[in-house]
Length: 421
Image (cartoon, rainbow, N blue to C red; front, side):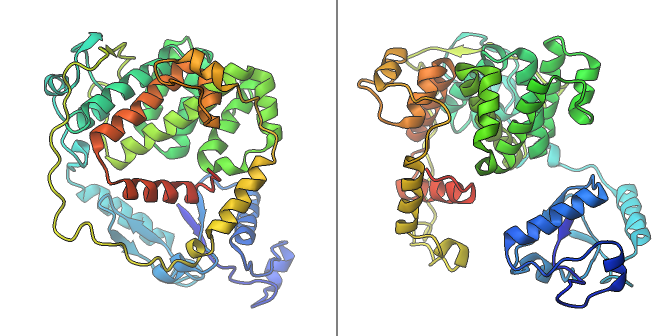
């Protein structure tokens, strides 16, 4: 991975005639956006294939690694610095880095990362924790379910059902939903999800050239498929950048119900990838599993979550004051201003009436819903919306987390994603 820091030779600093000759003439960026624009031009000009991330304009990464003007680092599997080159240009020696990589691989011992960060139950033990199933009982469970079944058995059950619905019952074309799932996993660098998506694509009749197109040249794919894949990737990386025109084109390609199912798939795939990556879930032995076909009895039979251990002393103390300038710059008046702007926009898809939602899923809504996103999801795609909402409610009941902690976490996530909600 490359990290773009400051311009070493900007036109308003130590300007170099050689840079001018090559057309590299930029003033030192003074904002994060400006720095990203210059970095983007660098990527395009050099046709870079290695991921490039951009340091903030306050140079926090550059200072931490003393990376100005350039420097090579090697990070081992445990996250430790295995090699630190000298500062460029004279200390920039790729040959040394190559030698260090070779030595590390030669001395590499079998690692225990395959077991993940949390215990993985056996298939038999996990099924004993889960609620009673009405179909698909005792079949092979994916590794992530064998991690979460011990502490959140009913939540695990709802996610298993939802995953199966996305893989087998979604109104999206089976090839398209597998390709979308692959592209999202690729953007998140989640290898296990990529393997599952590739297996689903082959199971749906995907040809070898279609599988290969995901990894490189996508010209063999239809324009509609390419639009969907490009939008899925951008929704994963920076959803706030997706334009009205992009969504209008996708809506024309898919129609309203499939468009909502597409967004639901993107949301679920990102949720699942973060679960797999954060818990460091090992890949399934023997390769990716086919859809489970599992459905659980309602009301729940069994699957009681174990009692939570008490918090350690001092864990409930008030948090320290946030000093980050970026966070402190946003206050409630500015949030309300953003909300007012959002209320004045035309939605990209008509919002169904609350009565439609109530009719589609009366067991979840005793009266018409006023929540806009619920009305959209339940109005167009209730089959995928219902287990997601049930999963949220089930998790709240099982996790028994502190509400202040939950709302603070919600704020952190939406703030980082620049989501007005």
